[in-house]
Length: 214
Ligand SMILES: Nc1ncnc2c1ncn2[C@@H]1O[C@H](COP(=O)(O)OP(=O)(O)OP(=O)(O)O)[C@@H](O)[C@H]1O
Image (cartoon, rainbow, N blue to C red; front, side):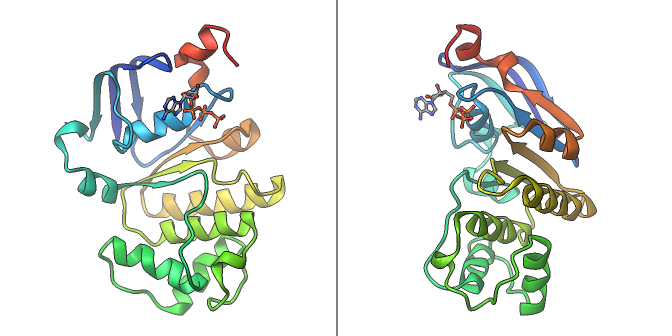
């Protein structure tokens, strides 16, 4: 197991008695708006703390792990892509640098960009990309990291259905070839069914939904 959660309570948002997330598989998190999908993801790399209960990453209580080390192993691609100043190349390089990794060749960068259907020159100014292109750049940056777990929060929300399916399938293929664990939040049930090995419906664990909220 990558993660196991026991007796988790996040104030009036989430209650989980017991839940596991398998290693080297794609787990999709679905559920209504406000059901706590993003909160669940943030629990897994200790960006949010539960009020009670324990979360284990590979049998170790994540509260006992150094957060910086944990986040190198368990990396997150947030809902709004983080774009730095400069070109596409600068944006990829900065991810490697923060992770303490060696630079990669332009050709390798282009290969990954191509997988993400982002066929732009590496010298293109990143801030001039569309919202969907920025999402694909953020995915590209994460694909070059040597993390063990990739947490994706609605990574295809700005993409049309066809592009979303192509890009997310290519991302999952890349991760499966490398025996990585992926946890992806999506509101797109069809996409989730297409790419997931394991599906978690947050409505089941949501206080908000149980109380008739949203
Ligand atoms: N930092 C926070 N402080 C207080 N409440 C929060 C915080 N973040 C989220 N919430 C609340 O927690 C609940 C779950 O939010 P969350 O963003 O996890 O849901 P979600 O399922 O990802 O929603 P969506 O699909 O709309 O993005 C919501 O009611 C939200 O208002």
